[in-house]
Length: 69
Image (cartoon, rainbow, N blue to C red; front, side):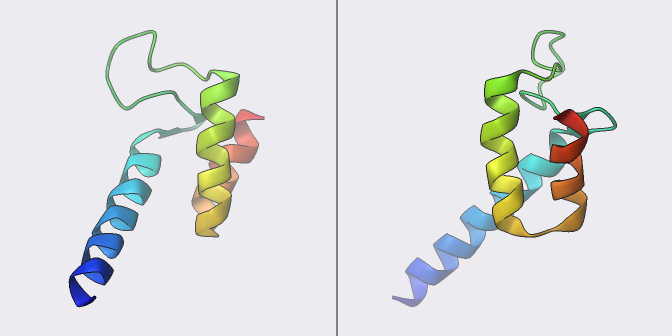
């Protein structure tokens, strides 16, 4: 079971890091990829990532979600 906890923690840490990579002044972009189409705020992607941001309860991520709304 300890391995499951470590795996879960690693997954959470990576998910939060991805949210931070997608955070911009305008909100949450679709992907950290430097493609012009991915560096946009798309409603569906922003809402899905925003729900994840809310679940973290981290103020900077919640604020990024608000900025894109």
